[in-house]
Image (cartoon, rainbow over all chains, first blue to last red; front, side, top):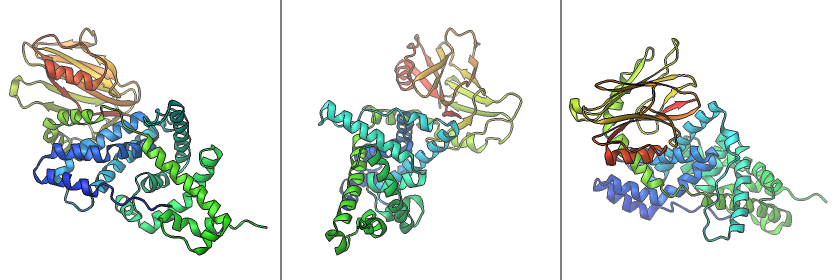
Length: 194
Length: 227
């Protein structure tokens, strides 16, 4: 397996930092949305399993990013910082949706996938795979799903994941390794990964 | 002959960490096959991650949200700090234009029983309520302006509009109404004012807010999460 990409936004983050140093928060937010908008949406979408909730969490995340930018002190990369905000917003939404008991039902409707380079038929197959994957992820406990998404979708290192969640990297590594067989079996049963 | 399960028992943790595997795993056919199956899982996750994209207008909507929340943030902090734990929770948001400004006061009550708690400051924080709670709205509209109160659920469902509604009271100073929060969801209230007729609602909060700003002015309450 290829190791996760390291800090894919490290170089472009320099532009964000320059905008911040000029006090141009609007430009900094625009750059951050371009860098991490899709990845954060995908994280929220798979964490929450609901298009409307994910959209709200995504919108709220970047709204909060804007208001919190003046307080960013560079303790972590901007990427990790934005993920941390998104993670908190998604966890809030999960709590609310759990109370509403709408979580499972809403997972049944999934959007068409965004892959303009593919044919309609290929998009349908990919859409079906995404749907099965979302169901398999949903079967995992929230903490485990969160760790899997951070590791393999967001491609964070365990150290970065530890900074997000406040847990030890070794604990997270163990959690991911233990979850993989369940995820594999679920995906193979759905015909996605065989 | 029993298949080798060393990949599952020993190799998976290193695989999950992206660390190199020892020589056995490259020479053992069972382990190579097991590794390939997990690589498929990781690939599927990567593909799924790239396949989902936010709606096309999302960046504009983020800026629209920021624009709406900006002027009243300081007041929101003050209101939240002063929020009583019991009793009627009342929130006031007003533009900085003095007595002639558009103002919205709102509160949520639950019969004669306990009052809905308020939320904290900042983007994304919401006040929690329950189905059946009542949202009390009072809008002060500058003299000589057309005004309206609109309540939306989930940003795309208009559940209440003052204009032409017998449940809405009109006075010299403004408008008032009570709206039962019947279904679960996120409710937001808009108060609008303009010198000319207000644009009719489309039912979409963001679009109606933008149209109101073009025609005059608008204020929005923080979200109320009905759980």
